[in-house]
Image (cartoon, rainbow, N blue to C red; front, top):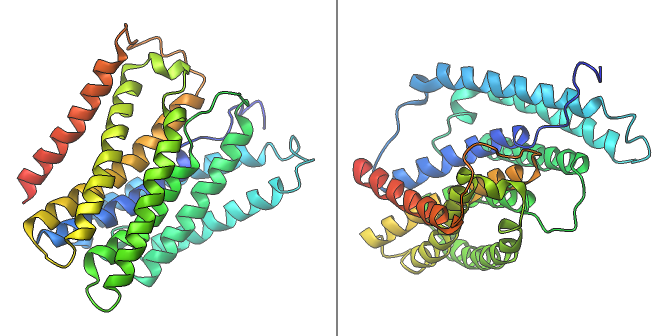
Length: 303
C-alpha cells in the first residue's frame, strides 16, 4: 500500500465541506438581510452533488492515506481511535448530505440538520488537521495556525445565521455573545500574526503574499464592521446592512485565507514560479486592494 500511496495526509481536503457549508449559509443569510434571494436549491442540486462527489472521493483517498500509517504510529494510542472516528463521521456526513441534499448541501437557513452537518464537518476538519500536523516536520518557528481559522468558520456557521435572522427575545443575548466572540477573535488574530509573517518557503510566492494581504484586510473588516453591526443591530438601517455584509465577508475570507496560508507554509514546495523579487509589501497591498475591490463590486451588482 505504501508504494501505491506514498503521500502524507492532505492538508485542505478535510476542511472543504466545512468551508462550503459555512460560506454558503452565511452568504445566504447576509443576502437575505439585503432582500436578495438565491436560486431555489432544486436548481443547483445536480451541480452541487457532482462537486460533492469529487470532494467525497478526495476525502476517502485522504482517509486511506491516514489508515496506511497506523503501524507507524502504533505507539500513539489516540491515532487509531481518531482515525476510526474520522471514518464514522465521514460515513454519517455522506448519509446526511446525500439523503437531504437540498436541505443540507444548499441550505437557505439554519435548521437542526444543517447545524448537525456543520458540527460533523467541524469535527472532521479538526481531526484532519490533527493527522496533517502529525505528519509535518516540527519546527521552532511559529507557523500560522490551522486550527484557529477552522474554529472561526465553525462558530460563524452557527452564530451568523442566528444573528442575522433572529429578531426576538434572544437578540440581547446574541449581541452579548457577539461582543465576546469578536473580542476573542481580535485577540487570537493578533496572536496569530507572528505565524502569518513567519519566514517560510512560501514567502517566495506572489500568490502567498496576496493571500496575506486579503487575510489582513479581512481581520480589519471583521472587527470594525462587526462592532458597527452589533452597535446598529436594532436600527436596521442601511449602515447596519452594509456593515453586516462586510462582517460576514471578512469572517469567511479570514477563515479561507487562514487555512490556505497555513497549508502553503507546510507544503514542501520551493515555489520556483511566481517568485517575489523584493518588496513583498506591494503584493500584500495588492491582495488587500483586491479583497476590497471584490467586496465593493459584489455588493454593487447584488444590491
